Image (tube, rainbow, N blue to C red; front, side, top):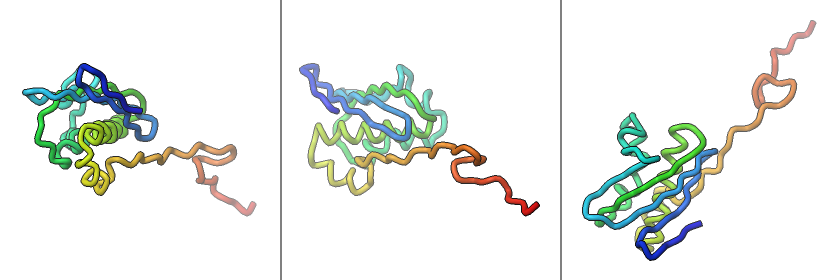
Length: 135
């Protein structure tokens, strides 16, 4: 699901586990990155998560500067960062098809659909059974 409007912003949705990120990029003179109306460094406190969120722009080697606005809900903080990376990659491909090969090789365009398996009745976790005892 991706759209482009006459306001010159490009929008796409990125997902990971139960996190959903709606990403909008707008060409700008000064680069900015906001997540849920907070700066990316304020929202993601660890440098690792900041790198994951911005990785598509860095490794996609996009020469242009963008104003990136993200609205993300659900999941944990790490899943949200990866959902942002997925959505950002999709917007960059919509803007310029030449970036697609780089991002595809890095695996940023692929939706990582792995989910947590549900807990089953009679078991301690999804697959872990109680200790078996003969008597």
